[in-house]
Image (cartoon, rainbow, N blue to C red; front, side, top):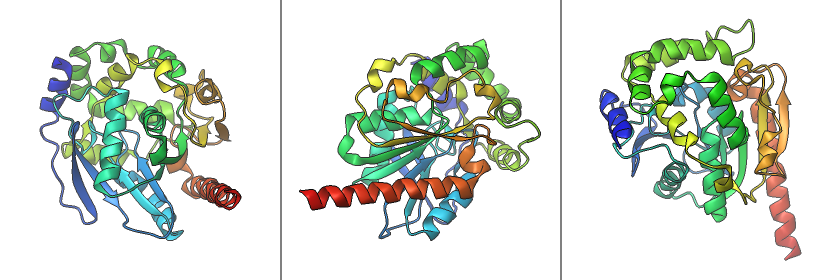
Length: 302
């Protein structure tokens, strides 16, 4: 498809950075850049940044979780950060789920909790549906239902970005301006994103990817029916001060995952994990502890 080939070509400057502790893993959708804290006695938590954020934005969350004894894996999805998409990557649910599966396999991770955010949450849901034995639980941030996301796209994303090929070109030409605009509307009033902007800007200047048009176009073609039947324990953290989602229901995820627990961070915008890392990790730790307790009870009962 021309639009995916164009993204692949436009992101040719994305480099394989030699950063200690990071590696690249080959997937069918491109090479993805991965941070792995290594083996641990605790559970494994896999995170994916919500572009234009990247692995480095999650340093504090990763540090806190590692300090608590969890194995932490964080990787940039194809088309974001320094993970260059392949010419065939269309940002579909199946492709996104396969990227996650490939990373788990490459790192010999049999089962993990996926702590994904926004659009990436749909890829996590898809893998949890397709391979429930691989997913211990879902801990999502700012991920609504797919129909709610489609409505948000129509309201919020400029129409040019939704047009194949044109969207890729416009997105690449104005990627720095779009990044600034995104932080402005997604964070609470009074928060200018100064803690997030510099790192994102530096990444873009160094050839980093921000294929917003690609993921928008890819998810627009997906239906809510394709995510039905997820049984994994699911918690959704929702930043109520996200002005881009002011018309989105925080409870909409229950349309496809009826058992989802929704926790509001009233003072946070689109990135509750990065805006309040201590509180976020405390809640995630409680989620993991409860999960471990339930597994122990189930094992005892059997």
